[in-house]
Image 1 (cartoon, rainbow, N blue to C red):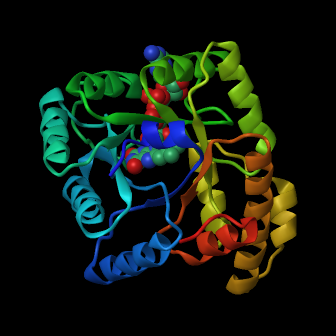
Image 2 (cartoon, rainbow, N blue to C red; image 1 turned 180 degrees about the vertical axis):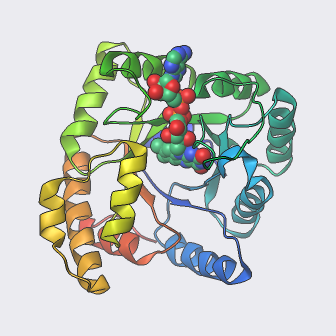
Length: 286
Ligand code: FAD
């Protein structure tokens, strides 16, 4: 297994993100997806963490399974929401015992309306990064939002906070976006603040227009009019997925040509779109 900071120092990384399944059936689907994607020799895979620790055990179980049963390096997502420092120390100790060396340190999605996740010892992801760094041995990633985090007051403060966070972390993975200029502009803005850590673009191939539009609204990404038009009103899932793959492939090619240090695919626990984009880009497979 490897630290992601070391992988990035050696060259580009191609990685996949999964969420922990809730049912036995979903578990089987994820197992099949990971098996199918293993042949693409990803640099690493990452597993999301539910707001307020709601997937604490399931995230750990998937990360540990990947560590023990595959040849892929896993990364666990971890959030500030509803966690005390004692909680985080225990979670980190369990990952160390399981041989897991990579953590994505996040603020955390807001809890569902009306839910009270309980108090947290951390205000921002940076506080969590500092705690994880003090535990030694972990390679630490953070989130970046090319079109700004939706809670940021303005662009300058968004970039300043992101720069502070990245100075303490090893790398960032971005929220998804559909126009390469958002990514390159952010990289330039961070460079002007003295930060040149690797920032891996997050890629979301559109397979369901309404679902991705909703996710974009929540995450502060714009679902551009040209993309909505290109997809049109087709109710044909296969046609939507075909266009989604085409658009994502064009975006990935532009990002790689412009010097991006890798690509991170939000797979939604399915392998088809990612495998197709991989093939079209001519990326190495085993
Ligand atoms: P932060 O870095 O804390 O930033 C949040 C806001 O606070 C920003 O507006 C920032 O500018 C501002 N801020 C930061 N520091 C300060 C300061 N000192 N003073 C004032 N303002 C400040 N969520 C999950 O719950 N689980 C997941 O598994 C998950 N995985 C993700 C994976 C990726 C690749 C990405 C991009 C996001 C993921 N998220 C996940 C979503 C993320 O948790 C949310 O976007 C969250 O709202 C913010 O996270 P952050 O780490 O950017 O927070």
